[in-house]
Length: 636
Image (cartoon, rainbow, N blue to C red; front, top):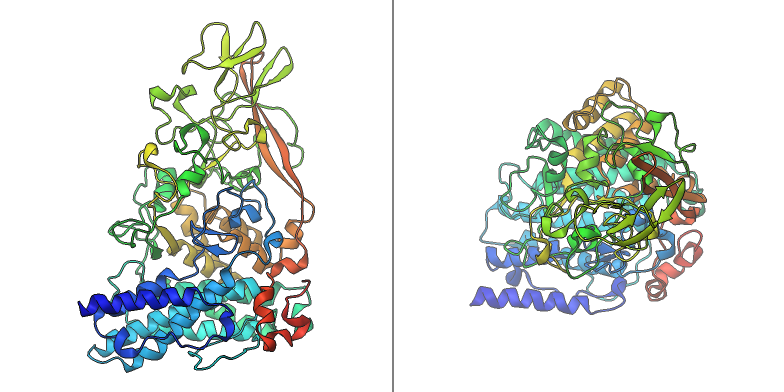
């Protein structure tokens, strides 16, 4: 009963902390005592559960810089901020939205209390106490990395404040130095011979993986930034060249530590079906599954994660096989992303390249293929593991009761007959070739005198005309009955760190440090080999970047890659993004594909490399308000 009571106290105080305002100058009045936290292993794990639950992870439930949200419109993921998805919102439009800033500082206050208490714990082995301390430092570093990504320099608060204080923003490089210090300390404290049996908790290797990720981000800013922020803000935004070199070396060293340990290998459970292998890499991630690639997870299954669930399947499934509760088709890959996937022979993935077209000459041009699947069957297997293309048999689409064309998910705008284009006005319509009219389908095979006039899935669930022909497969559950899927019923866990990312971080850091090209190639080509792709004989910066685009699509990395490379403003300067329109040509008895613009004018200004601090937090902290630009980031 005593253990239960202490756990309840921990939950109660965590709730109190979540209701407080002015998060930067709160005293630690709600801190639990060391005796309360460390009365038993169960109470420590309960406190740690709070720390990990508060971890600001960009997973299924992350949207609009708010953790644990529900993106009802489907246009609030980071994929929508780039050219991955076709809702195409702009992150800078959301620059002060969400409650992430306050959420993270509340988490920091909680973990600071834990870190301060751990050394005084008694009744446990030294190795166990050290391990818990390492976990605390991992969590704190994770929190500060999220803040640094969004804001640059932020106030570094490393102890529980006994009285209310106003803390100024540190330089961005100082924040990254603290992240580096915490993670290197965490890695040394978490003994590799004492593996953490708690699924979803940090390990030595998670600390190294996070260091590689964070230091690559910081080092890249120092190497590529040309905004002038470093000098104009006195270092609050930006990373100096000396620090950048140190951070890049740290990224390399951390990734190398994982590689040479031999603890992880690339997932390869289905070597005879490379597309399925890549798809299931992101499904075999729950506690107890055998995934040799996973390093750090957030559990989303009832049995092991305090009933935490999400809504990914509800949001992502195509219209034809969506949940009976609606939604569906809310996170749809763009044609821009599709073209980044090379063909399986290593040739360009630009649509129609096999017919002599390039990325600009293929726009608004009728390109014929014999089947709806023909343009995609020869792509990099990661394409079919990530994306549902037109003509894909997926989940229950082959169920005869659904009456779907070919038992597949399809996207078809209409037909071409006698040289005239006819656009359908609903899903699953037949086209009468004698009257040139559409009617509702009555089965999987049109009767005599009719052909399929429209697809069963396109755009949003009620919009056949949005000209988006692809749907997201990565992260979706390929097993659970669709009828059971609704809001907050998806149980696929989130693999936050994996060995594939470590290899890519190592390859990029090695390249940017001007190491021998063979080193980068050795790491990058392991990923291509797993996918069945030919090895690169030489390595370039563009090849490294494109490999990240396809390997990490919809893993909430692409936006941050554009940010750290400082290419957000060049890649999105009056940018046009594309979709795909498909017709059945009755005259030529084949399919016609049109790559067409679906959004235009997408632009990022230099200020978008940072979000602005919430005005309420600046106003409540005089020390910040007195700093350059009144505490705001450049351009705000």
